[in-house]
Length: 488
Image (cartoon, rainbow, N blue to C red):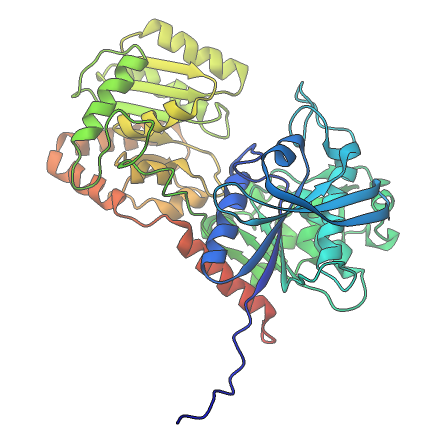
């Protein structure tokens, strides 16, 4: 009879994921998608995860199985604050919700009032998120769940590493993820004292940023490791052009900076089962793609013709996303009997430019100003090519959706676009960021489109790539372990 094993059961890694938004409860951008998907994927790998999120009205209304865990007293931002446990609809990911009506129970979005103006007390609102994240990552935690890692996201939770740095006793290691370096949580100097950080930290070697207080810089300076949402973006933000004033700090910490590409929700974005499509299809059976193209042409009021190349774009209509570049080349492009479909909102001047373009070319240009989830899926399925000429793009999602839907993307060589599109294999990459280079890449794609064998090969390559969250979660798990190892 074999001797009983003396091996201790393998301890699962514990992670507290701190975020200001999470899909499907509250969303303003890609961070919400990451916050909903990455913790779920980490749990599939055996990691014990809790997600800490503010108790906005939509979060409290939509979260499942809410119960009171603990009541904090005398917190500087709000006095009494309740901490609730709950679960995320769909995945069941465990949530920790900060129930603080005075800071979070209000109309509008997470960061702005109904008229689009930033809440004047955002520093206090997100200092509370960070403070509770730090408490839960320290010996002061009232919970039995003690994380090994606190994973912070963007400026709204970036004070967690700073608070932990100045706390005593045993505490979790921290990872700070930059989703978009352009948003830095900048406040006047007096806010340092108001959120309870020591005056000495207000210096270049600390939280000071050109005379102001940057919560994001606090996170980048005090965290154990920095991650961002693609390897190329991790390199770009160490240079002046995309460093937004943080490039010196990031370059100095380059040995503690890792780029990990986001995944996508492959159940929501699946052309074979997508309920928003008129007919499903996959890499082995593409007839449904033509049916969706005809449906998209009809919906957008365009001439129904399966042979006209149809170029789609779903985007914020801004300079950053290259909307101006598309407007510039559109007259020349439309001389070649193509169709253009655009869905999005953004800068008024660009919106009006696209409205005028559609009015001048009703058979060939369809524009919807706004956002429509069903239409966004139909554009991905019905377009032949997807346009994504972003000036910078930390990761990007639509270029991955497009490949999964057999719609080769045409992208600028930046950030996550470079890391997720293979030029001439799954899509087309252009550089430099000029109208001439963008137009040339579209011409290259149109030439390939006319060679049906070559085009079908690109579609097949794109549709069979793995963009699921599993690989990203494996990379994050490896990063957590390296941060916790003595050699790191």
